[in-house]
Structure formats: structure tokens, C-alpha cells
Length: 95
Image 1 (tube, rainbow, N blue to C red):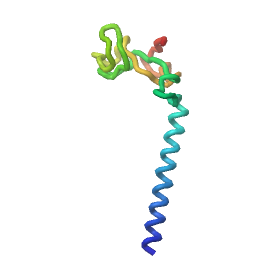
Image 2: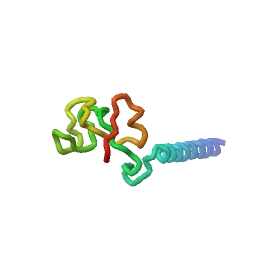
Image 3: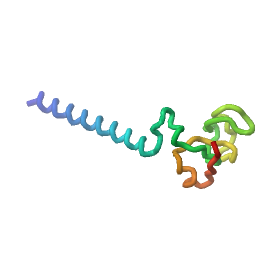
Image 4: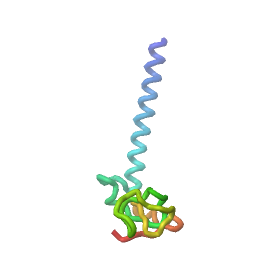
């Protein structure tokens, strides 16, 4: 009886983990981040970056992660296409 309970518990746990992994991959694909690095279905969004969290160079520096202030208009990050226009302060930057 104990072995049967253990097997049932393990089967239920395995099913739960497999379902969660499947749902996560479906959400990722729906968000348009299903390319190699996710950038094929993304856009640059400026004005919403937290200090130190920018994706690439801007006017005053040449490396990612060097934004000095939150929400700087010249700093950008990649977001799924169509998202930037929904964010207050977000400005789409042409790639």
C-alpha cells in the first residue's frame, strides 16, 4: 500500500512539472520571444530602463548596463513587439 502511494505521488508530481514546463514554453512563444535570442520579434523601447539595466550603447557610453538614471530617454531595452506603446513613458526606437 505504501509503495503504491509513493508511485502515485511521483506520477502526479511528474505530470505537474511536465505541464508547467509546457505552459511556460507556450507563454514564451505567444509573447513573440521564440527566436534564437528573442530579438527577431522584439523592438527597442527607450525611456523605461532602470539605471544599469540598459541593453546596449547610448549617446554617453558604449556598453550595456551603463545607464546612469532611471527612465533616461536615450536608454533602451528589448521588449516584445507591441509592448513599448503600452508602457507609460515608453518610446519605440527604430532598429
